[in-house]
Length: 167
Image (tube, rainbow, N blue to C red):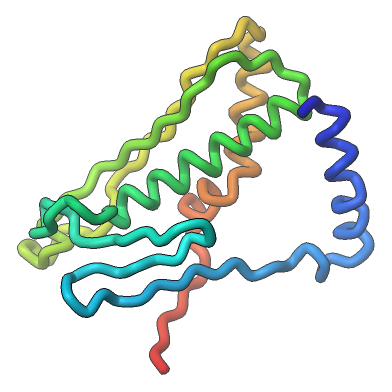
């Protein structure tokens, strides 16, 4: 897809959202079912079933997906798609590019070993390995726009309001 095709697809959407902001509001959903045989949650992905379980550092077998890995994978997926869309819109010459995310966890918090140790990632690093001969100012612009428009990055960076309930 080139910039012209991308703009042609997005132009009517942008116009509709400008005219009626309510049209831009959607709710994404994820659903999972707890496994009755092991400590795992079967997550419906829309295309397949992903089974998430405990990370080996917390006693898991390593056979199931770790939700921390899934978070990083979601970040890589969103950042990669956003980078590609922005590069396409800017007519940015982008060759073979890879995206990596890594994050640091201290499982003492997760396991309740040390109450003063936070639960969750202490730091997440997102890195793009760009294959381009574009000038640095265009690279900087590409990264700035990717950061700005990546939904997962912005969600992690700007903590949304969260609620928990049971029914």
